[in-house]
Image (cartoon, rainbow, N blue to C red; front, side, top):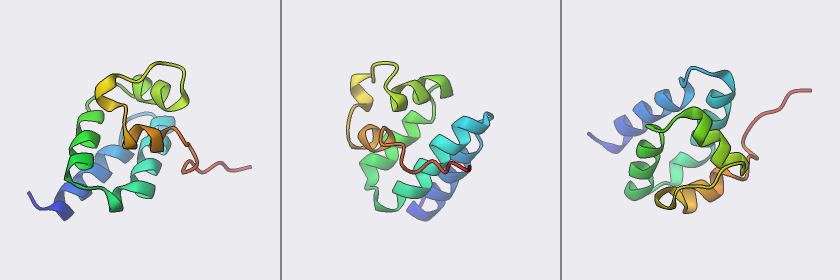
Length: 88
C-alpha cells in the first residue's frame, strides 16, 4: 500500500473512533502531525489505533503510564494537547 493511501486510511480511523472526545483528540492529533511522519512513526500510530480510546486518552492526559513501546516522539507530541480545538 502506498504512503498516501495508508495515511488516508489512518486519517479515517483516527477521526472515527466512536466517541466524540476521542475523535477530537486522536483525529486532531493526526491532522496536526501526520504529514511529517516517517514509516516507523506511521507504523507506531497504526499500532496505537488498535488500543482502547480510554487508554490513549489517559496516556495523552498523563493520568496513566504510557507503555514503553509507545513512549517516544508520537506520544510526547500527543501529550501536548495543543491540537484539540476548544470552542467557547
